[in-house]
Image (spheres, one colour):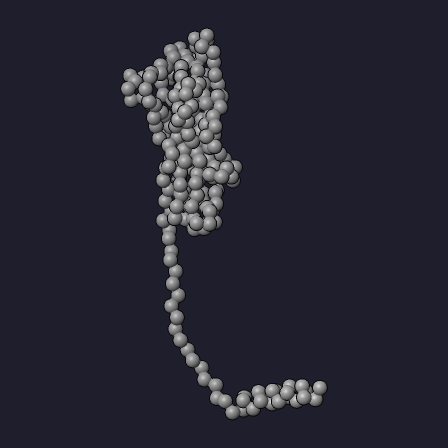
Length: 214
């Protein structure tokens, strides 16, 4: 026991002796701090929105028929009339082989950061924005298909926000984000009621807008 106590005392004594004989010096050095800043978030369409092959018939009334394409790629018929109704609008799927929601890949953002995304049509109306899908081979005055009521989610199906066409979505750990876009498609009723707008064989196409704020 006495041996262990002496070692303890000797150690403390040596410490004090060092303080009394050593002169401290201050050494300074400069170091460089670096950071890589990226403010360029980009996105690209990896799959275009496609409504497949449809049958469309206009109406002489102010009624419209429609389909809804969800962001997950599934579709439902919102209004469908029977072919026996001569004045009723009609829009239904003939072949859904190529049906696809719009898919966009976002890159260049920071990891786990929140982005604000909004999707809209090309034309402003009293009921919101719409896009007109037109047939370049159809005669003037023929019917358009109206793209409206846009919806979007993250690729894994999650979504936040109160409006379907406006979302705040979080990027993944690598700063990427996949966005799925859906919408509703409707027939067009005539400006002057009484004469139905005609639809013709061919491709109907149009554009819509996607905006990202960060």
